[in-house]
Length: 607
Image (tube, rainbow, N blue to C red):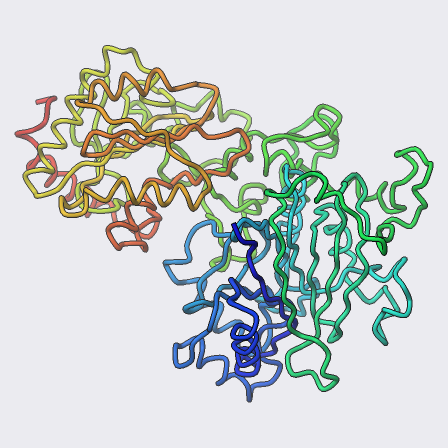
């Protein structure tokens, strides 16, 4: 398999015509290239160039190849990026770019994704905000990258706008561009991040100069890092602003290739203590003592103090983001399991821990605490009586004062049915255990008989409307009350359900275990044999008899609304993927439930 061919560019400054003219020329002579990654300011630095940018954004001009940018600041950035953020196609947790227009993608905040086998990490914006809505990175963005740095594997590319401070340390003086010798002019946060991430290539802009530093060694890693600073498009000094690379993905390289060090390799510019013949403990940076107390925490000064030891205004971000912490019991900061669960469900960290998010609608995460596959506002994680009063607070326990009984449509011995709050489509139904159970697979085997009756009744009911039933359940290891979702899909689209779910799984980086059964009962029996209460999982029961099952790894980020998002995409109602976009008043909900009960009555097994 051929290595991907990548173009790298410095500050574009809205000069897209000049950039893409050059790209087309290079693509014709040395291409084709797979992508263009832009660092530094992407948007214009003067209003006169805004029309040129908008020609591409609005489709009057074409972007020639997939182009990704992180410099989300400059003239026109707030207007363009606000519209991009509101686009329903860009909803959800997306790290591989928000689509601005055909072939143009905004890498927002921070993240890591795989492109043609290459692992690409990025930090968008700059540290100094000057009150700007866009173009800055937050502490969450920094901590997210730190969590990625702890994951196994080597990062191939790290994209940042600012140069890291200290990058010229230990470099050959004659190679350093004029005016760049003062290493204090860079970003110290980027320096700290790149020292942890240890990418094979670090690309940056904003300095207006081209600089290809000698490779340098990384502490506690066998591979070297190459730093590349790129000039701005159309710079008067005619310094290089476009650079081509065709690196082999580290995931496919042999150990000898990865550890190879060119003759001009230097020590790391970020470790100023000579490491030769010294114990590992003495080779730390001078700032490590201070940083040790910062790497694993998330500053939550407004959070109530609920822990008896350690710093009560901090929690361990590493644990929240990945489920583990290398410091274990030695960690100075609490490992908040409730906050971890909410994070896995796509909730904003600021909202989880502080109860509010300053980004508001521009935040890419959810601003309500999640439970049981349906979104409801909750008490914040860690409330002292949360576990004791779980069934009283539960939205699905019939005995709870919080249950929305007006949505209940039929009640059996072990299960009841209710219309989904904020339904994806009409007649979107939840099949819910009467008992407070974390999933439908944990109930006694004989309860499957009643569940099968509800499922078969819904299938016949939907069939009379020219539709097929798709059932799915997201089972969290910390789930509080199960619900099996039933969504009607037009028969004309039911045949491609399996392909759509498979494609969505590929985009998230996993494969379903798939098995087909002659009847629903056999399929449910098989699910029970596969289910492990120590793991979260997601499964789909398709109309043609196949079951798709995915056991979720401990540190895997799996969207709680995955099933709903996939079906929403199939039905071309992406704006309804989030139930909050579909809520209606209680009077209207009651009317819908009553109408459903009348239509479903002849099929209802509880009657």
